[in-house]
Structures are given as C-alpha cells and as structure tokens.
View 1 (cartoon, rainbow, N blue to C red):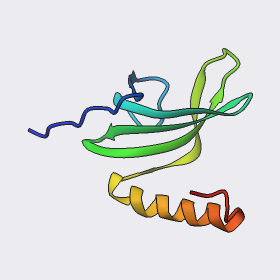
View 2 (cartoon, rainbow, N blue to C red; view 1 turned 30 degrees about the horizontal axis):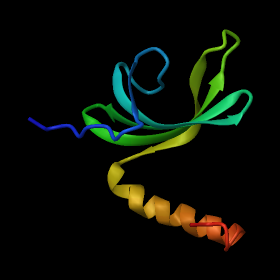
View 3 (tube, helix red, strand yellow; view 1 turned 90 degrees about the vertical axis):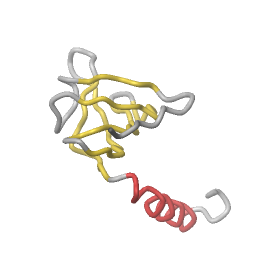
Length: 102
C-alpha cells in the first residue's frame, strides 16, 4: 500500500467532485489560491487522477452564481517535472527583470 505524504502547513485539503475538470472524484491539496483579476483565480493543487499524483496549475473563473470553476487554461503534470519547470519559470522571470527574479 502506498503511503501518502502529509500536506505542508498552509495547504488546504479539499474533496472536489462536480467543480473539478477531468475527474470523477478527486482528493486534492491546494497550495495556492491567488487572485488573478476580479473574475479569475490562479490555483496550484496536488491531486490524484486515475491512481496517479499530479500537480495542477490552473485558472479558475467565476460563474454567474458566484462559484469558481476550473477553466481549460492550465497545465497538469507529474511532480517529477516540477524542478525543471521551476527552473524554466525562474529563467523566464530573470529574462524580463534580472534584478527582481529570485
């Protein structure tokens, strides 16, 4: 049996069913829920899909009812790619603002 990692402090565990794309019943841990603009949020989740664990970075939009739903704008990838993607994001940030990127 595979042991699951605990969520770090500050992460929120969720059980989403109808509000999540590409899944029937997902258990996820949310690491970021940032306001992108008045009608969109950027969320970073770790979730399971078809028995595999993924990182999902996605834009969520507000519906007419005031609820947030996931959009098609995003990417879901295996955690083993996270380091390489972070390096790419860091390089892109440095290319725009060499002093401001960490």
